[in-house]
Image 1 (cartoon, rainbow, N blue to C red):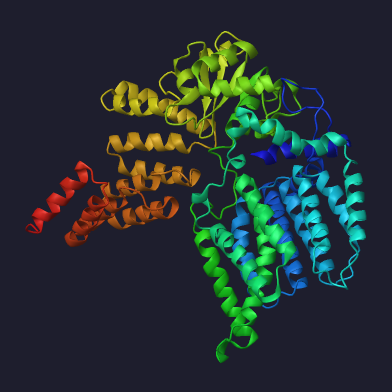
Image 2: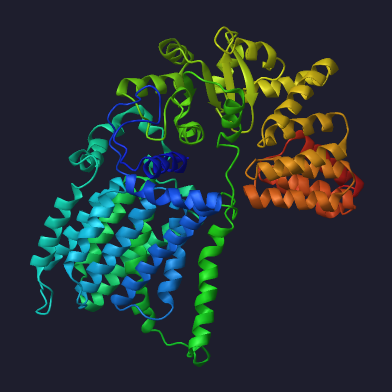
Length: 628
């Protein structure tokens, strides 16, 4: 979600021809001084969107990622890595890096880190590289991302290693690195906010990270290992220290590599957001070490030529990347996810010309600001940087934690309209509170967000004409509603009308289609159910259970082959989960393969996931087979 606010600032820079030094992106603290460390990145990104739209943003991702690993490959070559092994290592590291390739400032910082490694390692390995080239890297880094301090960490490692024995007679003078470091530190102060920009990472570590709101941001938490089981991060973590020790046994300890390994592994322990810089550092040194180890292997004669070795390396690249490429969490697809980006809500606000004090979740603030800026009376409450005072952020967190905190926030800021996230957890969160609040009317909903207006405010007429009356917002209330509409046809018709209105009101209406399909299933309209579920699956590629429901509908239509394809699609996109063997057993039973159905039903029971339906189905099949 960050990219949208960065694009807004980039637009400001290009249109106003000046640096942003005041807060212009949210309404509570509008006009107050702001430190913007990312202005350089934002100025670079805006033309990509301006000229290419979504394709331009993906082009940014591709070009910056290729630049990072091209520099890593060049640095590994400078260090002596030869052959195809470095490309295999880079392919593995790229899978780790992939989760951080959003169009955000660290994509520039990653290029700068790789460029610094290239310059320092080329210099350390005998190339005539002037240390002065480090200075522009430091300046650009300080003006694009808060992680600029990593430049000085890496430079400090090389300086310190130069003083440790044994020292080579041909080693370049350390004095040049000292001078480059001092010049880099001085030029880093040349930025729109001066020393305040350079203080930000330290202020975050000493102050901001202790605030509750920052502890809710997943990238600032520890590494989520279940995300990285497919992408090779555990392999790099285990392999790199072993290669450091193996190389030390053969040639003596590479002090720079050992220090970089320790520092960047420690950074990874700090938080998820450091996986990208770890992948870059690991790719560089693991490439060199593994290529050196591979040179000692005796390959069969058939693999001695360049083409056979290239084919072997290509096969190895496929092997190390395939698990990550098959990860359902990272579909190979170019789109803006409509189930968490409030595209429809922004459309509705513009269409209805809603103005005044808006409330929004901070991760929706970037997109809302992107769509509605510069109109001051349509700015979001909070943006991606959690703008506002410490007190405001505390009230925001309290509002997410309890009904009392939410009502206190409403009373303090007297919002005119609210943009609430659709996904509020199993208990409904704020949406459940709003379903009970008669002072507000819900006038819009789609897969990403709900819009509410005050019934007694400036949008009273909109509330009276357009309020949803039968369809609640909270997920728990929707489940209860599903039970009620089974026996109440009048209520069912009203719910269908409101669902059809939701479909017509936003291009991102997968959840409404899914609920309309549930009604069709209830009424035995299998063709309608399949049509709507298929459309919902296209809009919600990550929706759990959607394809399974499609398979059930196809079974009801008497099409077991189509049902099996949907059950397999559910397994591919969501991984194996309870009930899928049972569904596959139903397909086998529909085909007349009772033995296969019996095996699958038993497998479901043996995994401890049996339900009465599974046991009844197994019993029926077993009786038809004559017992056993």
